[in-house]
Length: 270
Image 1 (cartoon, rainbow, N blue to C red):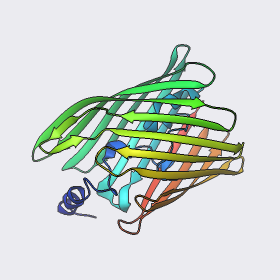
Image 2: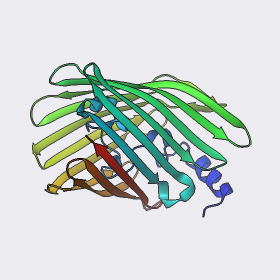
Image 3: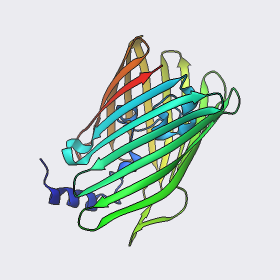
Image 4: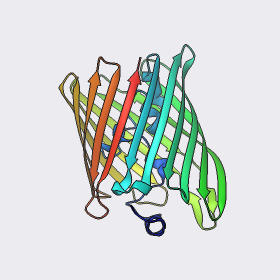
């Protein structure tokens, strides 16, 4: 197991690197890792992690449990749990997540709401409580929010955008919680295939370009591949559906500089 000192070195070295991201920005496990973390055009319970506007795709009630072990290091594990319920006035969702280890960890508590404005446009957002815990220093709570929109252009194309924590929020001396802006395009040439193209800009990092492809081999099996040239990440994933109610997904992201990142997701949708 990686010792605590090594974890601190990794977190310090990569805090402002194009390869590293806060635990708040990499939630969702295998839902998105198979697409190299593209996915603001995705709908369903998993959209609570990337773009809450997609929660309008929840038909009744849904739950998601996801885990990711960054660079395959146990102390850099991210675990998230989410649930959503659809009502006549819209869809409400909640999320709980934890990233890190005993001496340093980040926690996120979110309350989301989404509503379909018409047949083509969905709007959603979430209020976030972000909690930093450092054993030798103490804890700090930060309140922020995120908002997104999804819009169908026609039967083949849709666009989406999402903003996380706009503004400048100070975490500690010399460290801010960076705003994140994303813009995505989804192309669905057939019911079995769709392609995701996404721009991702975290305020203190270079602009990232992401491409993801989903292919339904047979009805229960969906394969995914993704690429992020900016961070030199290549990913692969698969999702199995059971009785259209249960879903199990796994994915791995490959990076020659930092190592591989595996992820897992379990879903229930009614």
